Length: 112
Image 1 (cartoon, rainbow, N blue to C red):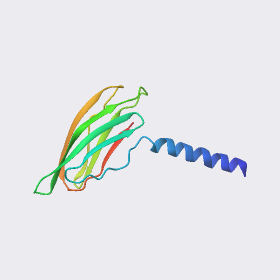
Image 2 (image 1 turned 45 degrees about the vertical axis):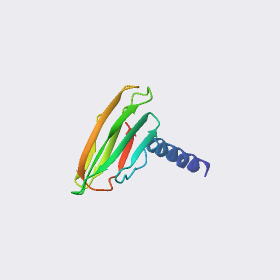
Image 3 (image 1 turned 135 degrees about the vertical axis):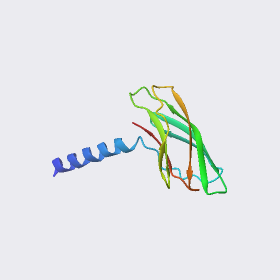
């Protein structure tokens, strides 16, 4: 029984360590400004909506940890996912601008 609990605890810890580097989806709406942080990454972006049902998401992403990983942002538009350039090594910052159909677009900050 103890062996099984140890294996389950180890599996849960491994899954938890993978998920910790992905920020929760920030489904932004018109006019929102988001400031997000995950271990090793920081980002800020704004949402601008247009009368034709499209949205521009623009901002920056920065690598904040010397861990060999890079920080990036992705937006999941109705027509597909758009991703920023990878910001790395530590201290590197990348600007991004996405555009597509939708007025409620999930946006993620992550490291990989």
